[in-house]
Image 1 (cartoon, rainbow over the protein chains, first blue to last red):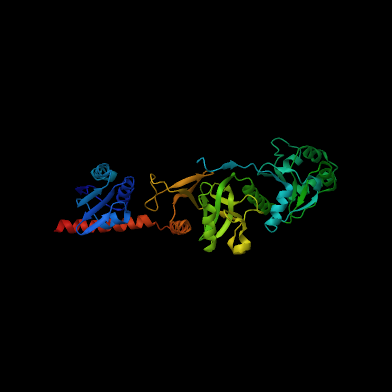
Image 2 (tube, chains in turn red, cyan):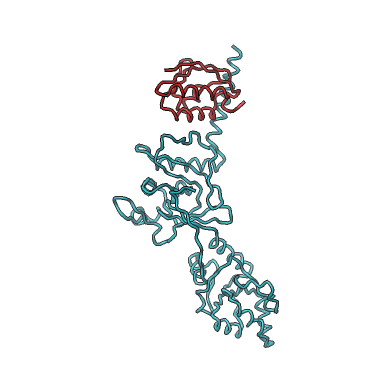
Length: 88
Length: 331
């Protein structure tokens, strides 16, 4: 299991397009993906789940990957956040 | 184009007799009747054009469009009468030396005796309509535009769901007909099953219909055989033709493939040069495809009214994120 804190680096925050992008990338892996923030824990393969987290710019959330390809999944998701979901 | 979808271009052959049949089917749209040259009703119409043969009758045959339907309005009819009263038959004979598809007299006009005799001789049908030549021309163009529209056939099912024409395609056995059957059960309508004929009307819309009206409303359901839809579901369950407004391709669920996660991602696909909203619907046990198709049709209707679900949700989420951002900065 990989647990890591990540920061939302795009100005718009995680709105629907980034959420769909995360869910789409995550669906390509076998491992499970969860995001935790405050008392919330959501499935990272669910668009509605990710939107519900409500993460604005500079928000910190915990990413949890678990499964056989967890390392690859974690780095793929981290890369999406670093690249600001191809936004500003 | 996918390999599993069959496309074929259609070469239309329509004859003068077909034109009369279309007219009768449309409830006398042109009010045509054949008054001479009946033996030539099998002549083919090869161009979606009409010609007013005033100039050829006066002896000028340059650029004479002989393959067009020749429409004789009141002017041409008067001129014809004048020629015949003067015993001047040369240009009439010369005109009939061309292989013209037919002559149409508007305003209930009658052909002159020599003209009618010549038409009988060469087997050129003469049709008559009570309409004014202007109205007649417009209506002929309307019919020819449809008959000569670029067309093709596609392997699929065309259904009307909540007023939206939905084209279902996909490999054999994926469940297109079964999906259509469930949609019929839910009160929607079938246009045709298996072979859908599509026409591009004036580059603005695609009209789909059955290739053959006798078989269009039959379906083959594996395990049952052939069923007749209007007999089983009533006459309200069928339609003759419908504009294609949504194209849903059914395919077996591929775990390695990305399927649409947000609605409104602008996916369109080309059909005879027109972009049609397109969606791939993955099929697997437990997924109720008819309900998904119904929902897709509802979404399509919403979009037609300018309501984009994903855009609206996105702006709500953005507002919410912004409010949270300011709140965290205040703290």
